[in-house]
Length: 360
Ligand SMILES: Nc1ncnc2c1ncn2[C@@H]1O[C@H](COP(=O)(O)OP(=O)(O)OP(=O)(O)O)[C@@H](O)[C@H]1O
Image 1: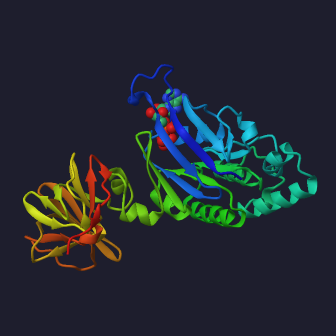
Image 2: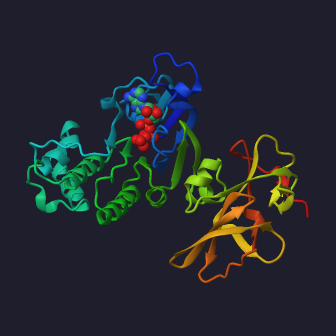
Image 3: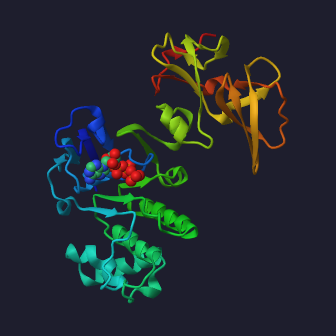
């Protein structure tokens, strides 16, 4: 197993890239810790698959280096990298049995028959295929085949990393939950470095210790689920993580006070003088309705979602959602106020770090 370092890594599929827009991956420097469970999250086309394929060696980066531990692997072929990769759709050998498919990576690495049998039996139990080990893969359903692909990805104990590219897309919802739990326990037992690509934030947040959010070819934040929730580093993280996402309002900020359309809003820290396009961000969980001072709120809709309600509306024409306890009355001329410790400040979409504590 190995720590993976991406050093000044960038990738363009154009032979002669002319501007940033020609890069599927913009320059990045990141270290993926040995043994970490990472989820790579972002909308379609943001570069997730490109990044995985660069780590596994299927794509050679046009710029920068990839290191495993201290070893430069940028030009090493896939076979030398000792990485297992599971794709969105099954890759199985139809003429082989389930057992032969699962054993394939171990045979390739010259493991002995007894070890192979033990590992294959163990993995077959994890993916619920013990009964079908001697069946040919041909004729199995797509979801059974995908379980074999997953099993084959997990069968080697000594891989540098296991990369999963939306592996549960074709799996039925109940089995999805079960397999995700299995992956998590596999990670606990063997401590493989795992990188798991998904569009789905629930999948990402339940699987990973660290969630890596990509937007437009960049990693915009690498953090724990709590960090992504409390201090989104970019407005995209605020919007993408959470349901509903973070509320954003244009503002001016001076010291520990923001002003939104002339109305003052307290902040939890001192930000000095912030320039650029300044916005304040607040999660719906930290917004409440008030009869006292606050920002004027125009209600548009109330959704009952089990134990709480999502109250949707507007503040100065901009969307403002809040999560409220079940049954909370909403007045026609309500105001909203924010838990000021939980307000974040953004300049040109990036979070601004406070420069000190708020003045008493
Ligand atoms: N082989 C290729 N040749 C040219 N452009 C490509 C190639 N593969 C991907 N791209 C482009 O690179 C960008 C990033 O694509 P990538 O597949 O890495 O994104 P993704 O986040 O994995 O998307 P998805 O979630 O839809 O799979 C996209 O603009 C895509 O069109």
